Image 1 (cartoon, rainbow, N blue to C red):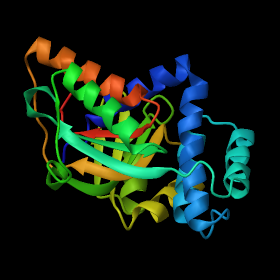
Image 2 (cartoon, helix red, strand yellow):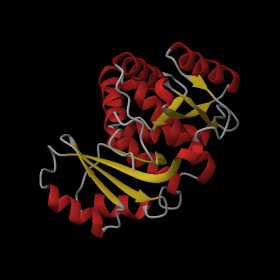
Image 3 (cartoon, rainbow, N blue to C red):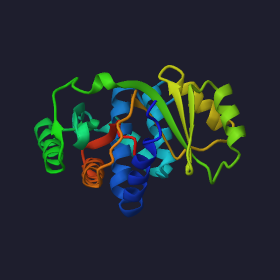
Length: 241
């Protein structure tokens, strides 16, 4: 499982959040609004909303912003209709990339995503061109600094139903099946564990190593600019960085 590359995604997001908190909060706000419109405003009966709120809180979004996003969705009627779209393509060195967007203008978003791929040595492909290299999984990131007892955390994760437990100098990435993810997340939070980030989405089955410094630089720029795009919610890839 190519899990450990997730850490650099989180680092990029955290750096962006530190510099532009409002922009990051806007993205989580849109996620919440879409969840409310599709399943209602009660997170206990709307799994997508519960997950969106948990992710927002993990990224330090204030409760007042979360509540405002819920109320906006309830009161917006037919306005601000957002479409959930996945774009797929390849980056330098054949790295597979999936880009999840929420947009009110498909043509604008497609043009922006294609421009970023083209500018940084990638190639935007057709639907399904890389999806077969990924599997839908839960991924939860914990900081070692907050929870230094690795064996204790690992045992708690395995007992709660984790499929895989990946360690690094920075912390841990816990992988779950798609079905187990909501219950696992809730159980770990109830036990006092905090997550730097959590998501349910495509996880690469195998990774691609890139050794050429120029290709590495292009990949970093490609992923960073995709993350920074207003319409982009999540970026998934199979680069073992």
